[in-house]
Image 1 (tube, rainbow, N blue to C red):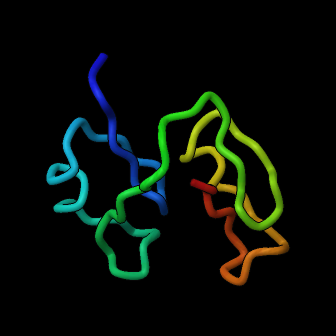
Image 2 (cartoon, rainbow, N blue to C red):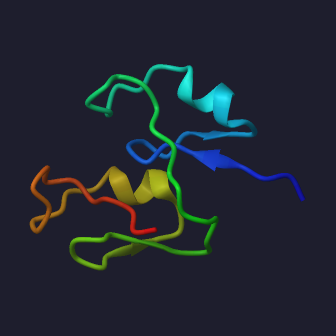
Length: 76
């Protein structure tokens, strides 16, 4: 099974780290994708409130009242 790499801010998936981090990301403060350093999971939880979603993209697209940025942040 091939390993996938995800952006922490938008959930974009890529088969290589270089392929991911060299692309732009509209949701990242640096405007580049930032590698999510956790493992692939069946459910991703927000580190601020515990809300779960089956994808990083689904999780980070929702608002979080407990996060300083008001967006969910995937826990590692």
